[in-house]
Length: 72
Image (cartoon, rainbow, N blue to C red; front, side):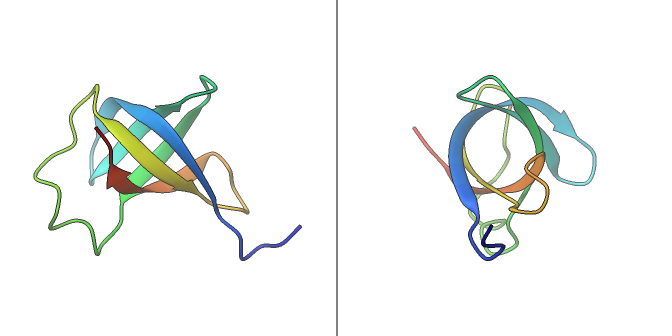
């Protein structure tokens, strides 16, 4: 397993959590905990439940990731 390779998946925000964290339901109906990347933080005013996003999952812990893009 190559630990440098992160997996990118599409999903939908289902819950806002404290400290800029969100719970995202992926296309395969699994749920992950994600945060907004620091470089993208200025691009988002707010992520609301129902927003479509692209998430980069950690190769070490696939239950956690970061939101890299808000999709339409």
